[in-house]
Image 1 (tube, helix red, strand yellow):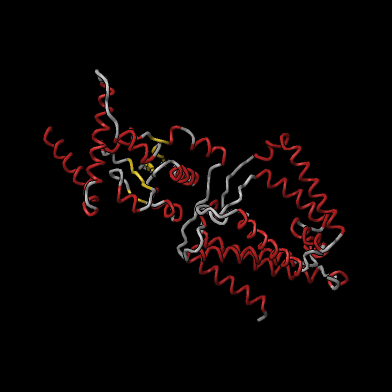
Image 2 (cartoon, chains in turn red, yellow; image 1 turned 60 degrees about the horizontal axis):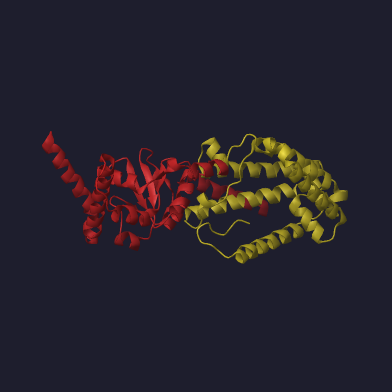
Length: 203
Length: 200
């Protein structure tokens, strides 16, 4: 057999192996750059910290917070209910693992806006329209939710609701982050449990 | 060349140095394979020399198999590899113009630069024509913008469009390549032009 036939057979055998391997169906960017840009700078793709606080207080099951910071930062301080997927890990693995469930709105946050914005462009570019960001990240959360104080004489019902949500979300945040690591993961489960108990009492 | 990584920021000089090294290697491979001769490239059109088809198709399938194995072993993230965007109309119109230029000039842009670097006069004219074409394209772009952007399909991959796995597509392509190589060898015998090929 001459060398050309040998190489042909080798290439055919290698591709036969590839055809049998469970290769992940790599997806490519589906969006056109200008359309993607206008989509990700649209306000509809971002939630304010107040909206996120409301999701947390209501324990909205259709929302998943994704913390893109390092595991060390996440252990120190995390928004209740968030899962930690460090940005390098997120960008280097199959996004379908995290974003595959289309019924869940995934909200990225980090310390600031940079990494969530990258993650948003990446995810939306791959066609995951269920991706959103939390405006301002943890920094904005600290400023708005944790340090909010009402100063004034009269409070409207709307303001009252807003401050109540902020206060409860702030409490949950403080409660979670003052727990030892081992207990943190159990925290949200216990919150759900006590909330259910309360609801049950009214029925 | 694209950045080496989209996550880590490498200094610009490193990107440029990588491009220079890859470009030099590519140019060397083209030149030593005899691709700086326009008669060898025209041979593809007339059928007496199909080296171009064999070299480029082999390079494509080797890269395809290699990148998929690297992806499987976690050495390469194919999600981050840039995929050329598919503008259907522009691809057809551009392909016809490029093909016509290819057979008239006897070079493709890469081999044209190779031939230029060894001092071939026809290559100098060819490259000058390329620059003139680029100038005309840029100047007339506002008028042909609609045509250039028509039927945009995004950076779609063939296996995605066909709905088959990347591995199966690779197998089909490699089988097609091997079949084509066999036909090409038959063509070389049928359209043999020893008076040209003996000189190459």
